Length: 302
Image (cartoon, rainbow, N blue to C red):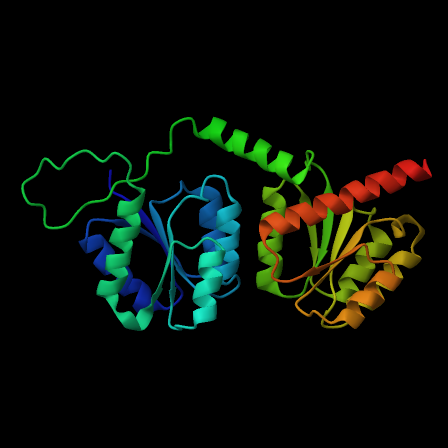
C-alpha cells in the first residue's frame, strides 16, 4: 500500500515542491492549504502515515492543530513533523512538548525534509518484512499496523480518557463559546465537539448579550475577556444579572496572566479562569470540573 502523507502548508510554492518530491519518492500526498481545511480532513479521512505541519497557517495555527491531533484517538500516534521558516528554540521546544515527532526549518532544504520524513516513517514501521527486491533505490516505508480493531481501540481510549478526567457522558450538553478570534474559536469548537458537547458560538459581545437575553441557558459558558465591542467582564456582569443565568458556570478565557483581571473576574462571579492557549486535555478537565461543580451546587439548592 502506498503510504499517504498529509501536507498542511499555505505557501503554494512550498506545497508544490513538497508534493512533487514526495510523489517522486513514491508517497501519496493529500494537501490542506490552511487550518480549516486541515480540520475538515482530520474529521473525514483515515489517518495518514505521516503529517507535515506548517507552524504558521491561516485560521488555525500549526501548534493548535498539533494539540487537536494529539487529542484525537485515531490520529494521536501519527508522526508529525513541524515545518517552519523560523528556527526559534522556544518554538521547537513547544512543538516537541506538545507531541511533535520532529521539527525542520524550511531553509535547511528539501533533502533535509525528506531525510526527516524517512526517519520518522522508519521509526513507526513494526516488524517490517525483509525486502525481496534487489537493491531498492530508497526504502519504501509502510503504514503502521494500527488499523485492526479500530472501533474497539477508539472506544477503549475514549473510556480511558473519561476515567482519567472524571468525565461523564457529555452528549447533549450545550456550551456557549464567546470568542472573537476565529482560529481560537475554531479549535475550541473542534475540541469541544470531539468531547461530545454541542457548541453555540458567538464572536462579539453584543451578539452574546442578545443570546443571553433570548436563548435558554446552556450548561456552561466559555467567555473571552477581550472582545472587540464589549469587555468579557462587563458581559459577565450582564449574565449574572439574568435570573436564569446566575448559577450557570462561567470560565473566562484570556491570553493574559493579569492577576487583577483574575481577581475582578472572580469577584464578578466567574467560576474559573483559563489561560490561552489551553491544551485539549486541560480544557476537557477544567470544563468537566466546572460542570461537576455546577451539578453539586444545584443539588444543594434542591
